[in-house]
Length: 384
Ligand code: UDP
Image (cartoon, rainbow, N blue to C red; front, side, top):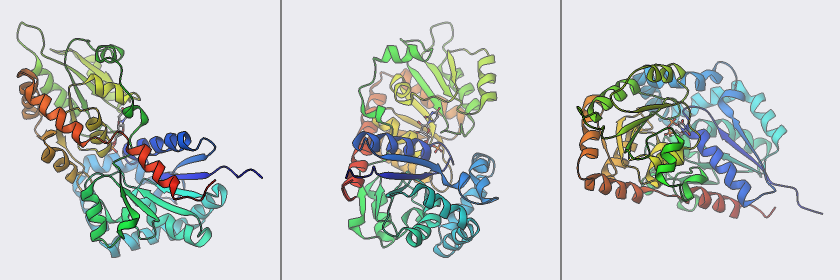
């Protein structure tokens, strides 16, 4: 009798864009390595826990943008084992029947978590309903590894860096359950990109001018408009040709996109909404101006794109700044005018400094991370 296809359940949530991007990258790679498999991605926090907890993903962008100190306090307080554990226990208790229904309906052979808040909710439920099902976590934060990622019920934990492994060891996780292959990013990043001029043209950019790419993660978080204003002023030259052009990812913020498109600028400014072809766009660019999102940093590293970081979400993203700056792959500057000055200086010089940073960024890149993580997860499963 032919073996049944493997049933793989990926648990994520749309708090920011990184968890979904990693979930999709893993899904595609599972299907590439095991074409018979059935892969289901669910937003556990939005669709499988009870109200009002299910509203967290919807309010996350506002929370981290408008009340960063509250978010930081929540992050820190829940990092205490007693608080994190009992908060999760409350949500799990209130959501019990929904969580159980998901497992009964999906009947997974493997559960893969790409979100820190889902582990304490699902691992105890799975241990009761389907104890033979393997549960693994793929950590999608680079630096600030919240303890909720590191549930001891994980059969394996995939961490992006050696520093993150040290955090997990310090929390008492056994070495043999920890793996480090990098942060899972989309397959396109492992492929050869198109010619740079073609990539620029495909986004409505001038094929011959350097590109500064401004983005704030999947939510368009941060003072994007102020940054574009300062950047455009700094990159314009009086009378002569502009030194560079600006591509802006406004993500889901349609109003910002319309506002940017409606203004006249001293250099070419191309507002882009949500972009699917991030690999090509990063290849088209010479400098990334970004918040310290782990996904964006991992992708830019693979593309050898130097980074100017203007901010970070307190808690999980603070250590990402050090990850980039200590490697020499980028600089941190929160003030838009000073940031624009840095960009103009980097692009206006002979290019050696920028090339040096690009090489350092490439040194951080792990273009085969997704492939290696999936191969390792599948190798530990019984044969299908
Ligand atoms: N992203 C994308 N298209 C966009 C904006 C963002 O595909 O228009 C992706 C980006 O490439 C990255 C993720 O969304 O993979 C953002 O993740 P990150 O960890 O940088 O920040 P988050 O949004 O999770 O705070």
